[in-house]
Image (cartoon, rainbow, N blue to C red; front, top):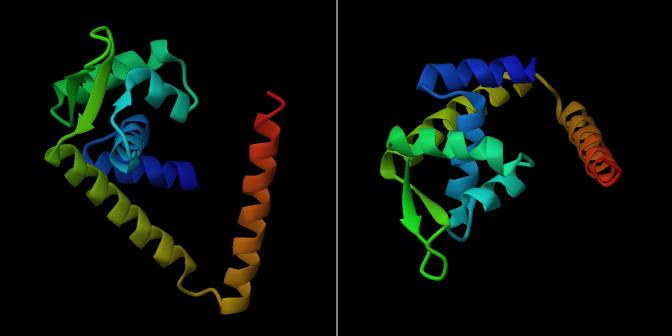
Amino acid sequence: CLSASRAAICKQVGLNVAQWRALAAIDRSTFVLSISDLARLLRRSRQSMHPLACGLERAGWVRFLPNQDDRRLLQMQITARGKSLVSAAEGRFNTWLLTMASDLSDHDLGKLVHTMRAIRERIARARDYV
């Protein structure tokens, strides 16, 4: 199962899945995210994101920055240590994915990619109804 494999990889590098998702989103962002921005991006409530963000900061994986325009807003910047964890987790996950797909033919991979795109589109459309 994909979720179980992701959780096992996270455990190997010292993260849980929620931490990995949050750190990866912060790392990929083209701008500095607030806690509310991160909550929206990950489709979670701000109230549930706040303790997660504080835990990331306590662990030294992100740094809180004051917002120049609104002192109430905390923005997050990933630290070198946080980047290292994301890189390690994603490297292990990509290796796992390659191992899973290594014996598939080009035709089978093409069908898999087509099916995954169709599933992703259906999930995106379903979110509009929730």
